[in-house]
Length: 102
Image (cartoon, rainbow, N blue to C red; front, side, top):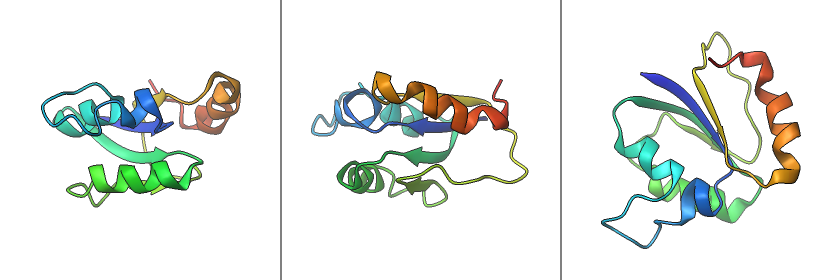
């Protein structure tokens, strides 16, 4: 399984397919519907987007969903998807670089 963190739960990250039951358009929907990925964390600074993500991930109770990246000890991370706004990309990269994703 590909151990994954998704940063940014806006349109591309989580919202595009929110009201479309038979459509998969967001990173979150693909991650949750595909057995190849083990989502470890979902991160967004907007509490409303956090609440939406919690509803979408109800069947995945092990996922950490928060407004800040939580430190994961002894975790070998494979993939980080940065779907946040362009201005925050550098900060997001610096936040996850110590995980050394593949």
